[in-house]
Length: 187
Ligand SMILES: C[S@@+](CC[C@H](N)C(=O)[O-])C[C@H]1O[C@@H](n2cnc3c(N)ncnc32)[C@H](O)[C@@H]1O
Image (cartoon, rainbow, N blue to C red):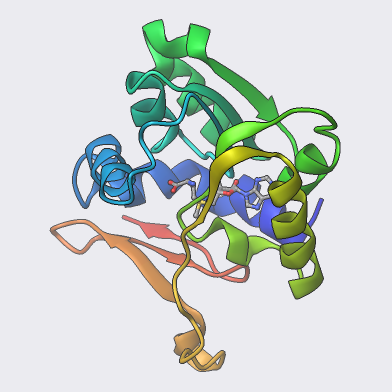
């Protein structure tokens, strides 16, 4: 198990949907983001690092046949319990996302998505390069690869600057920070 996977299994998986939810309905926000970049018309889509399904749900609602991949069991079970009647349009895979695309052989998608800073979880730049190259081979003609990530180049990886606050309740009693070496605190 790599560091990122352990981080989700021991810390972030339990609080991730909460941390995203405190900023408003995550499905609506993802739907708006997909529409803004004209990514909501794909007949078939592959969501790499799908998590609890922030993008899977609006894509399926828009009529896409969605393949969702993530290594975190907790988030995938949240995704499956959210799908309801959309489940027939979504195939869910618990796997490492690079391994999944490597093994995808002849499969092609109109949209390949790696959203919500997921690409920065890959262990090294060579894995990012390999992923982009593999994705290019698995796009249908005219398809799109959409990568969404935060520009962290100005962040100093020292002291408390190592931590990104991802959420805070209104009372300020519950916070979660995204770093492999810290814990969330909830009172
Ligand atoms: C920051 S979350 C983003 C989730 C979702 N895309 C969103 O925008 O809400 C990153 C997700 O990628 C998954 N993930 C990170 N690295 C992965 C990998 N190598 N293989 C599979 N899933 C991975 C995590 O489990 C987590 O669900």
